[in-house]
Amino acid sequence: MFLKALYLVICAVGIALVYNAWKTAMEVKKEQIEEDIINAWEKHVVSPSVTFQNLHVGINSNVDLIIPAVALLKALTVPSGTKENRDVLNNVEDLRDTFAHFFAKGSAAERAFMNKKVFQRIISTAKMLESSQYYIGGNAALMASIISEQFPEVKINFVGPVGPKLLEMLPKSMNIPMASHIASDEVHLIMEYGVGETWGDLKSPVANRFITSYDESNSQATMLETFFETLDTSKTDLVLLSGLHILEGQSKDFFARRIQAVCEGLNEIPRSLPVHLELASMANEDFVKQILIKVISKVSSLGLNEQELAFASLAGDGPHNLDFHHQSGPPEMYKASDMIMWLLQHYGHSSHNRESRLTRVHFHCLSYHIIGNVKGAWANSAAAVAAGSRMAGKQACDVQQLNSSIVDLKIPKYFKAFSNDVEREFDPNNPVISWETNEFEFSLSPVLVCNDPQKTVGLGDSISATGLMFSQYLYASK
Image 1 (cartoon, rainbow, N blue to C red):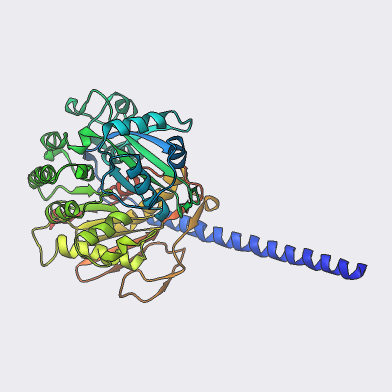
Image 2 (cartoon, one colour):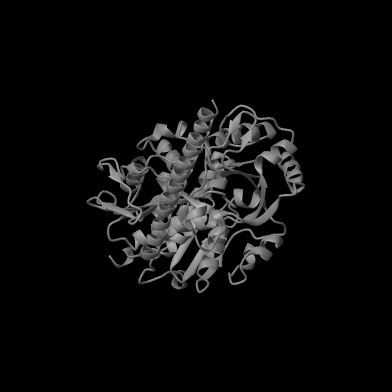
């Protein structure tokens, strides 16, 4: 009996040792894949022969109040409720239901608050949380700040509503016209959550954030005319525009008038000067359709994430448009490629639409990025998509240099890069995949997803800004 028990113990110990050895070997093998990607990116990320040196950036800026989402909801004594995607928020119940909708999907989203009194009460509660922090906010301000930090030699003229606190936080090297100064800061609430975090019966599949605000300056695009009036096209080689999404909280007539003002301003910019438009989360199909029809053909470059790409396809009756209603996490790569191709074909510069100036789309999501552009319009796109992907990991982990122990590769081993593609096996030593059609060319690179994200806000802006700064605009010479 003793010998039998001893034998069982020895077998159990042996199995445990073999399992631990196997597990260690698998972890080492996994980390080697990430290490191979990091090393390969170093070879791919090269600067273009001509770089952007003088930027004009606007028009949305604010102070971000960043707090843990679930902690705030508990402090507000809000239990988890029905998952329902509301276009705008009027009360705490709207916040609860809309947050639940995106929290369960793990998707980033932004919604305008329509009740100033309720929003101020929520902000007062948020400020009392020990973990609350203030940061630079607004897509335009974030893109300008990131470029100023990463490319200190670049000159930036920034136009947006800048209050006293934001002025203290923005880089001193940026030029901010006096017309941009406002008496008090606009504050946006950033509700962050981690992967696997629970709220009632709900569990987040990935780390992300939900944004809400009651913002008078940005929501009415008060700096729009100043943005175009202060643009000196003779001293600028790249224009960055964002903030149209915050107009969504306004009436249909007001939105139409501001979009018309955007179009008139863009029409005055010569085609030789590239204009990038960064989109953000919207929920009104009619408003998004207006941006698709009227605005994006007047810009050279477009930046957007999975929620914005899928919603644009839904609003414009593009490919895979019904996926928006049930999409959870990043779309399959070939679906994203199809939607990017659709944007370029229907709204971009092509043999069917020579008047459009849209020649580049940069799509970014948690696990991969794709840049699609018209052939001959942009150079260095493979390096740009690699640079953007690498920056995503760095910013999320809050490190200067990535290492394989803190990140994970999330794309499948076998995949299709585009709809008519054969199935490929991903090679970590060649992490940039490129292909082309008769008129367009594409570059794709995975993201190494941070295991313990330190900050999710501004990730898309950082990615788009980095990708732009590694891109070279050629269309002016055609």
